[in-house]
Image: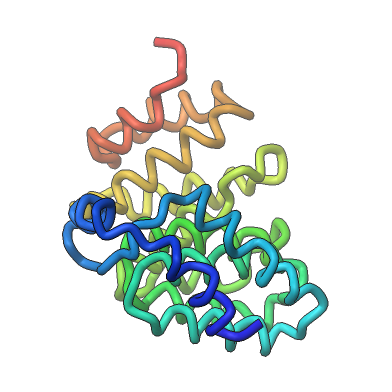
Amino acid sequence: MTTEDIITALRPLADPMRAPAMRAYMRDQFPFLGIATPARRAATKIPLRALAGAPAAELLDSANALWALPEREYQYAAIDLLAMHWKSFSQDDLPKLQALVLKKSWWDSVDGLAGVIGDVLRFEHQGMDEALQHGNFWMRRIALLHQLGWRAKTDERRLFAYSVSLGHENEFFIQKAIGWALRDYARHAPDNVARFISENRARLSNLSVREAGKHLSP
């Protein structure tokens, strides 16, 4: 697959009438082609699948080439590529995946990459302690979210320690991530999360507590 294959697949679907609203939703940070997610994924499915069996270096080169294009749909296509072929990556590739976190960063791309990184980690935590201390809050968000969906495989001690460690931060996207990560784990261990919140209420923001407790019994 080349970048041109994705451009060829997506350009004809561009909708100038839809693009301004999509851009506004992302705080006018990125230009958009104006393509809805289902249409984008349908159009790129074949060229992305054509990369099956490609080495990690080639996949990362393709993802970086897409990331360099201005319209946001190309970054989404890059995340789709990485998510589709996550089994081709090893933990040695994590620094290059994390490097994408710091480019054109916003919640949509960062959360997509958190899912990819979580898959590649395969219930381990390589580099996440360092990510938690990173100077960029988006990388700290990755550390908080990398265990999403792990359920019984979640490292509860690490999740709770990470939440307390960043609980003092005023950054909205960190507070929200703490709540999201705790809420996700609460689906598996509601009593443990409820007890953690009760014991650490003063160390967490109101937003984190509210998000974490959405599905917990009063």
